[in-house]
Length: 400
Ligand SMILES: Cc1cc2nc3c(=O)[nH]c(=O)nc-3n(C[C@H](O)[C@H](O)[C@H](O)COP(=O)(O)OP(=O)(O)OC[C@H]3O[C@@H](n4cnc5c(N)ncnc54)[C@H](O)[C@@H]3O)c2cc1C
Image (tube, rainbow, N blue to C red; front, side, top):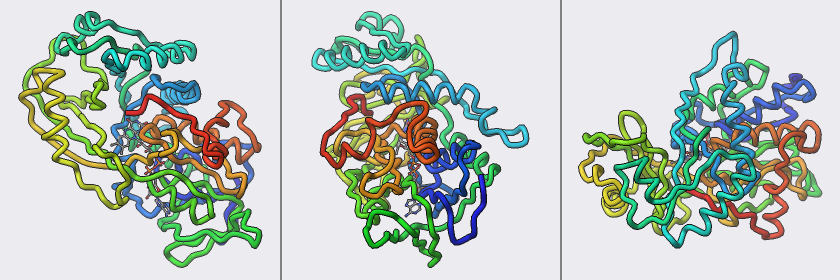
C-alpha cells in the first residue's frame, strides 16, 4: 500500500464499521493493491452502528447459493481469525459459540423450508430436516403440535462478538497503513459529465480528492448514493432486541437460534436469552430513532415465546436495545460492486440483517473489484447494482 498527500486518496471508504473496515482490511492486505485507503467514520465509539447493535450470528441456512457461499467463506475466515488479523501476535477474541439455527415451519411454510434445504445441501451446508417428533426429542421444552417440520444447522452456525470482528479488521487495516478520520461525508463532487466522483466533502469542511469511493454507510447508505445521483432502495428499519432471564432450566439440547413461524426469533446469550420480532408494520424509520418498541414485547414477543416454550411464561427482561437493518426493499439482498453510471462509486449496502456474517466475503470481493476489475474468488455479480437499475429482484427468502 502506498501513502498519498492528505488531500487525495485512491480509495475513500465511507463508514468504518464492520463493512468499511473489512474493505479497508482486504485492500491493505493485498500486495497487488497499489494505493492509499482513507476511512471516514464520524463515530469512533460505534455506539449507533448496526454492527455493534447486531445480534451477531452466522448461519448457512439461506435460500440463495451466493449467500450460502458468503457464509461458508466467513466460517473459514473465522477459523483462522487470529492469524488473519493479528498485530504483534495479538488479536481480539471472536468468541464464536456453535449453537446452530433452527427454522420451524407450519404446513404452510414447508414448501419454502424444503426448497431452501435442497439449495443448502447442494451448496454443502451441514443441515438436517427434522420432523415435529424429532424436534421434540431433541428440544423437549419446545411445543411442536402446530409444526410440520424444522431445519437445523448441524455445524458452523452460531454467534460471535461483533465488536471483536470489526475491531480485528480495523486494527489490522490501520497497522497496514490505512488511515481513519473522524468526520462525516456531507457531499460528493462529480465531474462535469457526472460519471465520476472526484472529491469527497466532509462535515469539517475538508475536501478530499479520490480515485474512488466505497459506500459502507449502513442504514444511511441511500443518502450517500444519492449524493452521486444513484438511487438505492435501502431504508433504515428498526429492530428491537430483548434480553431476558428465565429461572427454569430448559432440559434437553441447548436452544439453537430458533426462528418461529410467526417471525419471532430467540437464542441463548448465556446466562440469558435474546429475542426479537420485526415490527408490524415494518416501515422506514428515522436513522436517529433508536426507541425500543416495548409494546412488541408485551403484545407479540412474550406471548409467542411462552406459547412455544412454556418455561418462558415466567421470564424477566434484563436489557433492551434497538438498531437498524439497512433494508433493501427490492429483494432483501445486498448490493455489491460499482455503478455502471458512475464506475468509481462502489456499493456495499442493503444487507437486510445479514451483513455481519457477510463482511469477510464482501470486503474481499470489493477489494478484488477495485484491484483487478473483476472478482477473483467468490463471484458476487448477482448482487450487483445492475439489478437495481433494471428493477429485477434477486430475492433472499430466508430473512430473519
Ligand atoms: C438488531 C440487529 C440484529 C442483527 N443481527 C445480525 C446477525 O445476527 N447476523 C448478521 O450477519 N447481521 C446481523 N445484523 C445486521 C448487521 O449488523 C449489519 O448488516 C452489519 O453490521 C452492517 O455493517 P455496516 O458496516 O454496513 O453498517 P453499520 O455497522 O451501520 O456501519 C455504518 C457506518 O457508517 C457510518 N456513517 C453513516 N453515515 C456516514 C457518513 N455520512 N459519512 C461517514 N460515515 C457514515 C456510521 O457512523 C456507521 O459506523 C443485525 C442488525 C441489527 C440492527
